Image (cartoon, rainbow, N blue to C red):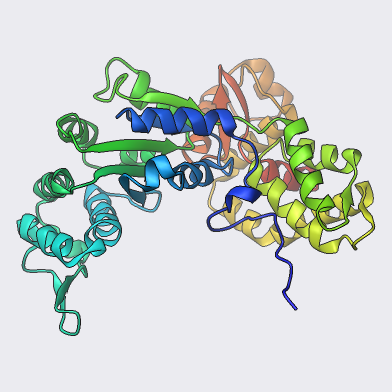
Length: 376
């Protein structure tokens, strides 16, 4: 007997039949890339940027004619780490497609020629480069792009959490990348990021190298009605239901953030017996269970910030949408130490992505953290 799969996917690639909406966004991304435009893709965390890219890359217009590369640089802290992540991704996604492409990779990357491994069984080079092997990162970057230029198919490279480059100690990374990228004729990029303020500064400030170099695409929350129709249809396919009221509670509780909604729907689908309905009681219980499941993680997250940073975080949470946070009235209302110390704390909280700023209004970035703070 074949076991039914849970249709609410929360990890890995989402099959097209289980992909919710994003019709407009996927059309924009597909059109831009097939017309040789770079794209800057932004959204809040866990809103589905990677899933959207995967969905578009699986379309025949992309998969039949392009080689796609995905590089996540969130974990990188230096330019050398960036080069290692990029080089590894290019080798695995491009060079590994054939012996010819592998050997071309080794031939062009002369700066790493003494560091490649060798597979005697396959009679091919292997990419077992370590961070210490990258002694000329500027030159290695040039070689990687030179290699992509020689690949027979056009290449699409996604650099996820691109704003991370602003944290590197090296001061010329943006200018260096822009100089190389603007010379490429066989490669286009998707610069993906979850820190809207930083991404906007990189791409829309006239003082920065990447100014107006990419087509902007921002992911907002999927419309509530469309999301409910999608969820209800998947429940009904095997004789289950989810009430409108239950879904509305879920959507509003997590501010429309895709990952959290998908996770609770996954649990709800598993808990609902065929012929029965997922109601508000079940949704509320599953939400509470999920908050409890993440208790240790959230405690650990706050363990690394200072006492004054916690005080400011709690004050912003209490306000929901905090304005004039450097004012004397805000300081007095929340028993903070001083306007200047509040401003210093806010800069760190923004850096840690615990809060977000939109038109001088500050709020908690993560709905799960906000829920957890509600229960403290």
